[in-house]
Image (cartoon, rainbow, N blue to C red; front, side):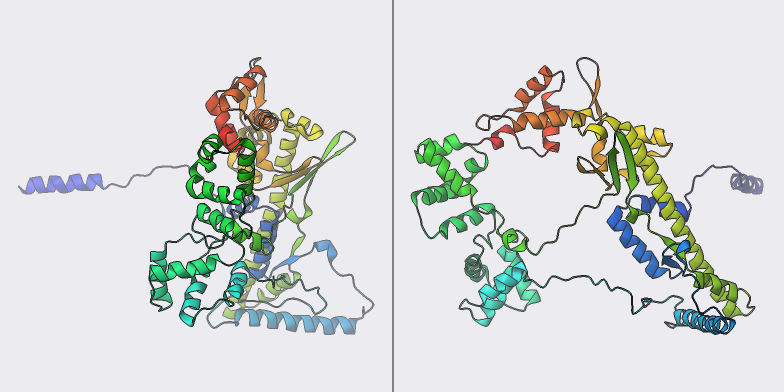
Length: 499
């Protein structure tokens, strides 16, 4: 029995024996990870990222090494000694202040490093009334008691950007009870919602498109026959109207073509998003800033990188001097200060290197794209675009596909023919009847032109579009036509029909 136990123990020891093996692992360094993150940033986001880095790392400064101030007329030993002592004291104080800013913290939460003469660039704030403010100002003219006013204000606060109330009244009843400590019911909410719906712009406070259009039609001062018929269509035949089954509408209303056209036109004049009519003035639109610029000078394509993608950055000389000064100290405080300053200096150098590497990679990759699509950039004709996928450019520049993808992501290029998203130049290939490889972008352009030139009273179906493209040498299935049409955000033929 003992022998068996010893055997079991020996077997267990044998199974637990350590084994040495070799593995080949690929691991990115922090600097490489930083570069990958910077590569995918567009120009505006890069500027913000640089500002953030400068805020957290005071060893990083704007400007180039060549921009150092020359020595002025105060070039005597007495002045130099005084300035040197003053600078040393200021640097010493700055570091001490930086490290003692918060008890137990080794960083400063904020820094005021602007001079009085520096131009201040404040962020402008809009002082105009918001959409909700305008509605609330109108609500003040309604005859409501305090409770009703608070509930109506709460309803206005629940409207979305389009001016719709997307939430059901039962949920709002519960929310008001918990958040406002106001007891109400759906019947009272319904009556107060009618008051909100009476505000301008007409249609605000509706719960769906049908109610929105009905509110606008019923608020029209002059109720003509056309308006009355339009109201009937929206109220009773909204499904047929949305699907453009005009023949069914005409049959039910028993009207001629001319009157039907007037009724449909009356409905189309209404605003399906009343909230936007007042909010448009308050909204800010982000300007597209191109990352690259391509110019054609006497048949020669020239590529340049937006200078905002490669700003002048430098390592602070003051911090470099601090490191030299504190590295001489032997006490614990000097060593900690030295380590802190060295960490900031290394971080600044790595960031500057990453920005420079980013600029080089962007230019190198974009130049390959420009050469690949040279015919297009010379003429601007979309039919000259070659099929091009990420792999084609990756092989050309010797970079990984993921790196090329980061370069193409969210970047814009300005050409003599307009400013375009870089990834829009990438497309799959398609074979024609003659065996020629063409870009799917070319096919989409032809498809778009065919739909643009169609008779709107009898729009082309996907089957007819497939036949037209087949006649042009592009053998494409109907389902592929439907896919391309959806990518171009073009509705089906029935919804493109006009009277």
